[in-house]
Length: 107
Image (cartoon, rainbow, N blue to C red; front, top):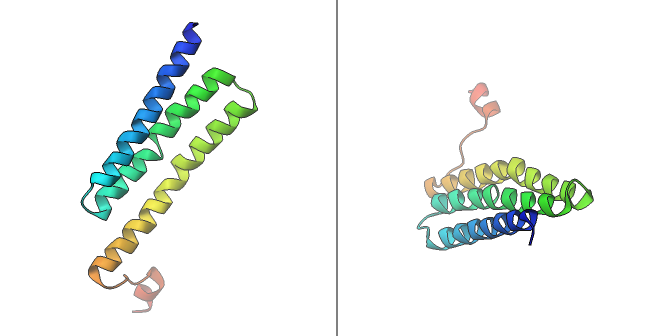
């Protein structure tokens, strides 16, 4: 095995390990807000390591670029989903939805 293959395997094992830890964290978490924490980690740490392993394997060809784009999309898009989930969970816990900015300005 070459050094490149060793690096690829280490990155892949670390990425899959990070995903497994995040999945176990989601299962073990006590409330929705703790679960969101682990779900957010699952969309940033693991995919970045796995995408890097794909780039090491494929170099900068179409599969490597696609992997980087997917990892970037997860990294950018997941905070939107986490925020919406946390707002919905907070509204459910409080039994109400906070007023929007337009309603506050109208008084």
